[in-house]
Image 1 (cartoon, rainbow, N blue to C red):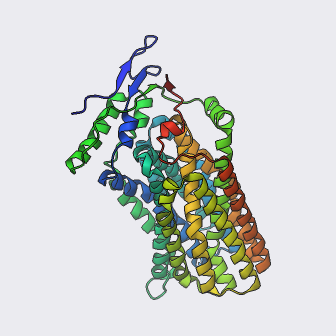
Image 2: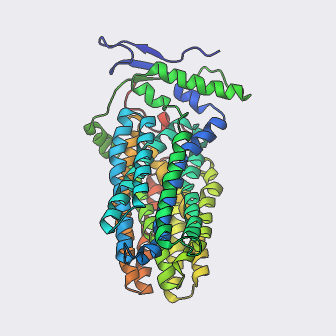
Image 3: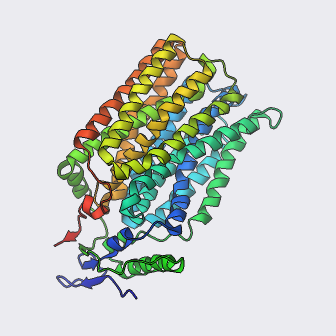
Length: 493
């Protein structure tokens, strides 16, 4: 039987649990030694569903663009559609920063309920929009909820999943975005069918369905524990021990035989918050190389993805004459390629390694986009050919984009993990994502294939540069514990 693994000691008159006390623990090693089991699958589903919701939201924005333009109430134009995409991303940026800061202070579990509630209420409100401004406000708040989810969810998953499968798990979960995309595309086919529902009510029903799914997710998350790693650093050692002991008991009850140790131990000085000055010191001085890599990866994939996907439907309708109610048919195979990429390639990030796989997936995505953009400009692709090209490109790009989130969530210390995720998501998306949909909306409005090709070349160049940066300065974090990859700020010798 395991005995309590956490021992608190007093220093300078502080009691165990108070800021400044020292906790010695083997909990990180015990979590990493666990076999992959039902517990991890349930965590991946209950938390990873965030990406499905985001995929649903982004796809709805694209596939519903025709209905929003035709709406007698809204009457949006192409520039409005691009602006709305940028507003959604801007909300996600600010939401990530604010909720990421709170996640490190008050806990992972509290915040992944708060952010889900924000998303649920805002996406439901979108269904009742009456003009451009109301639509943008509700989309901004929806984005804020999703952005906050990223910080709370990714930090929790990183801290609960064993090191040897952390890369594959993270990539597959992030790639599940495209399951939501497929749901959004399929749902739009039905909801925008005039034979089924008046299109003016169809687009509103689509957003209400997103809120309903979020309501169901609330109940899926009730049983997920707080991150034991977060509990330890915040002086709640006994609670962390109970959580880990409970997880271990689950595995034994399922017939798993767990190694009994002894396990490597770490000594941590508890704290309740990390000052912004220390966060800045870590990001911009101690780990400035990692910060550069993270920013380049996040900005490159954000521009690449958001610029292209937020205007996907516009390209099909404006250049290929596809009816808006049929756009979903073309997004389904595109989504399939995106889902398969992380599943097929994900294991290689844990075996071949982070740096070579990140470089490969980024660079090949950029090269393929440049090639397909050239064929598009020449008029050599029809709608089916364009869809096949994007399906192949984003098979690799999906793994690349997911690896960016993996990189920024495992390369920085525990005490600022959620805020670091939020920072890189926010700055990367701000630099590469917010302007992308707006820029591509303007390029599409020119009606020139060669103008749009220039936008594709820009996105391709950013991906290739990011891949080369990761190859040169990336961290080989595969199969290493989080504490080994980045020493906790609170660790003492």
